[in-house]
Length: 507
Image (cartoon, rainbow, N blue to C red; front, side):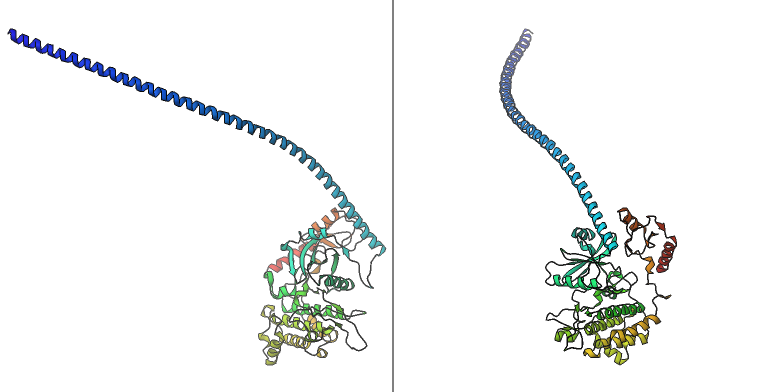
């Protein structure tokens, strides 16, 4: 029993020794780990301190750079503020100077208008018509600045025609719609054409000739009345979706052209040949009255002791292919019969609507074969067979090669055309084309919307005549006599008539 107790005590002792040994080893291990951890902490602490120092140094450097940049920006900002203040001061000075210049310009413009008005009034009162020759009327001189303003600086949108030596623009000049012909600077024949056209139109005034209103000398510009229905060529081709010309109207236009040519050829002391008659040069007013224009190559006809027919000889053949007299091409002699030939071609085009080349042969063949109706322009309506045949015969006679066989316009052609016009008046129930002339404002050349009567007895578009008076004009734009008063009376009867006419047009 004592042995058992001893063994148990011995076991307890051994376990205590083992526990003490394990505890000692554990304490040593813990102390070692604590030391290692302490060393690691110190190492990391040193690294962190080093990193902190580096960050602080970097921040210090960046702060210095930012402070330097801020100083530069602040300096530049101050300079910019100073420059802005200086510019604002200069702008104020410029605005002040601009206002002074605008005021001065306005005063000069008013003085100019007053002077021009006084000159015009003096011309009217004193009958000052500066003539180149007997019967020649004075022309209004326009400044180039007026011309540019009227055409919006020759905007292509306003261009209504273009040729080899000139372009034509629609413009609004001194409260009136006008056609402005600007000669090309590089045009070799521009100078001569300009002088010839001015000289001819100054001496020629006729309802069937385009009216020359004024000129600008430098650069060369001609100002004509504006004809709202364009050229005969445009109408034959139905450009801009325009309606075809009825046959009655075509006959009337042919009579208008014939009248214009007779007037030119019978001019005294010397007849004038137009020299370039074609549909492009026949313009139509608001009532579709034909007016002959473009006298750039027109010439006075001379009669010598050795010739019976007045003529003009030239070495420079000018004109339009298809309308040129073959005799002129061969001899260079421009005569009144040249225009008769061209007139014949125009008649054929009015009949058929076809181009000029080869047209005479085609019509002659159709006429001989009895099928003229097959080549007539159907868009003109149903041509009366007798009229169509008579016109075709007249046209072909005008186009004969031998000048002596061509008809005299005054003695023969005019009688034929006038009879047709009288027998087939334009104003008839099936004709909706004619615009009564009293519907047209004499200033704008357009159908009136708000017609007003003035002291001169004429009726104008209300807005146009009000603007005319408000601009200080004291004279009538039609009579050039002073208004007795500036009272405007609405022309209600005419306004209702215009409205009724428009409603009929839409039916």
